[in-house]
Image (cartoon, rainbow, N blue to C red; front, side):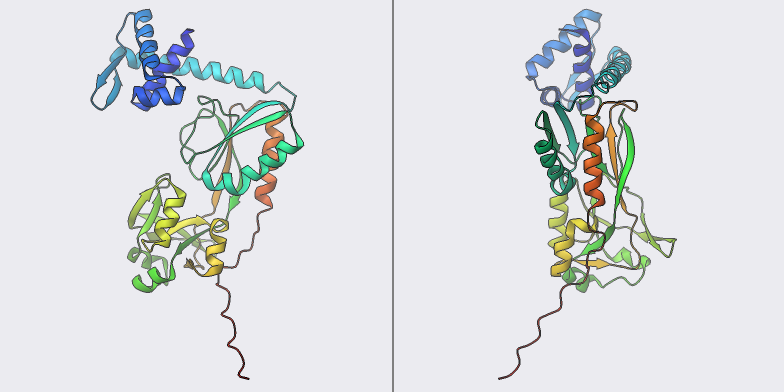
Length: 313
């Protein structure tokens, strides 16, 4: 067992706070993780982990070793990323992480087209609504919206999606439709846990910022669950308009304060190396960015008019 792999197992165990979760992330058994930790402790002559009822935590020696290990692993992964960037071929395995709604709507269809155009490329797409470290977790690319979390990769903004505040008409009938941002205190926000937890949300009108008070009613990291909670009448949420276009057109959802939209959702590409010169990343990234730019810019927010009553015979 190489020493970098032992150090990686230690860092993963501390990051996860659990040998079981570390085993899943490292794709090995829990006993194998325990053996690797024991092997590293024997090699260094120090106890590195403490087992507790709530998981594992580092000893003082474990903290020191983990600090050095993270620097070593980061340097090695940057080296691998830069070497991979020298590959000019359009072949091999390309691993990409993407949020659920972007994966279904944009990235998945784009990769299917690329798979047809480049048969020697193998795509592995993971849809996951969590922050990933593209270097530590060996991804070639991650596509994310909003906040990025901690990562050793490099990020750049590739698109913006118009965002709106939405709720069901029945919910707005019940609590009253806000007429100005200050009225938002009456409504409960269904919050994605990646979003800010400030007491106010910034809304904009004619270039001026207005602060709308936030009252959080429910927090989750699953966009489908959040949308289900909104449709169930539990509150309102901030969402890219393209994601709920059908619900707006059918009248199932209604835009709140349409004259005071929130900031758009920023879409970022995160990749391992700033200096990678290979062909695969630009080809994949340009295709995804083109798909994002091709999304419709104007989406009706009013439900279709009711059909005219039949004329009397």
